[in-house]
Image (cartoon, rainbow, N blue to C red; front, top):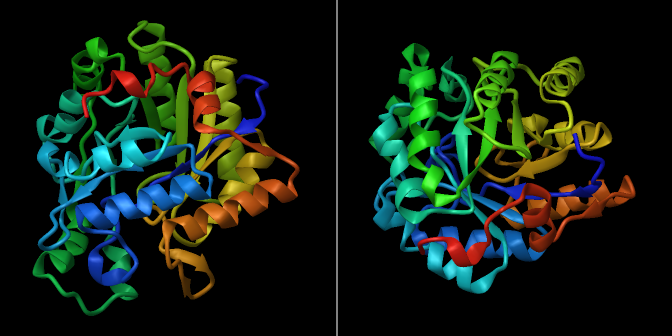
Length: 310
């Protein structure tokens, strides 16, 4: 991995893991998503990893028209790099998941690097009351759900977006996903610098123990050498400790209400910006410098905000 030590903070303001009833601070409508993203950028996030939600009931959607209702506002009010999900939600088809990245041509799109069980149902032990009927079913049905990301799916996304010059945040939920990425790198379907996001603590993927994080780091170093930039995210209560541990090993970091609703034990984060400020303080205390959006673009070799389609 490069010796560059400007740390890129990514913020994921909404996402598909949590449901609206879990926190009153989770942005749902286009206006709320735009406001949350802009505030996160102002707090220090260089990259904004964005999902969309149906503004009527908050269920995840990959309808590009919903993305178009907030992307121009974010772009016009920040210099942040915009990263659109191609993961969407585990129940969506690969064609549905791809549409925002395909049509809107962002600088970065996320790309899940392998199929996996994706267990959200333990959240039913904590959250008992839901405003919308889809929320309970969404969590409960994850007991018998495979998040499908086959080699054919991954290749389909890579080839479909190749002419857009969109680069990827390769989301690796387990060690095998690093091997899958190395496979595509060996076939020259992806080009360095590879932006590898280690996702820690999702049931069905690798855990969030320090040994797990170190194993991810060692394996990526062995497989990818100096051809990648590493970032980490911890799900739920693991968020800030994973950020701290990852940064100590040389990583960039990701926070946001997509990954965790919390600002501390039993304390709901009141905004995405609050989480960005917390992780900024952690990095500051480690005497690490925070990357600006322009520095993030240089580190990741991005095409620039003037070449997107929104």
